[in-house]
Length: 194
Image (cartoon, rainbow, N blue to C red):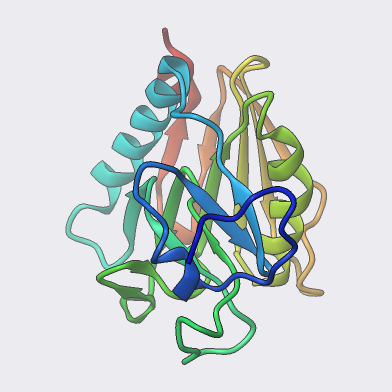
């Protein structure tokens, strides 16, 4: 199947996505193909690397696993759908998955427990609106949004009504507890260090 273009209105699935060339990165949200921005810059990669390191060090030898982009996360309202029926696939910057049954050779085939997105001017709208709603709807327990320019982190947590509550806000010099992962605390001084 040809790559999507802006003038084509078509409902895409994971099956279509698998046929697209590797040279371009796309996400599909509710059947709509969204081109991803060019490769992230140095600062983005530095933040991602340090966050991943802290999570990976803590999770070594434990049942929960951490993964960094690019890794396909397929989200659907029901389990067991075929590639032709899955119409949402995203590549968050970091995911944590505590149920290994959600993982397969192509990535994660269900909602991760935690998703982290590092926003940039070109992705902030999607990260703060479209993906916020998507992750909330699919029951991602925690959604972290990192703002590199402001050196801040917003942590959204699902509440009893299955909606994200008011975010916890952390500055560059804070420590972020991650109770779902035991005694892990993410040191933002290290994350935001130049």
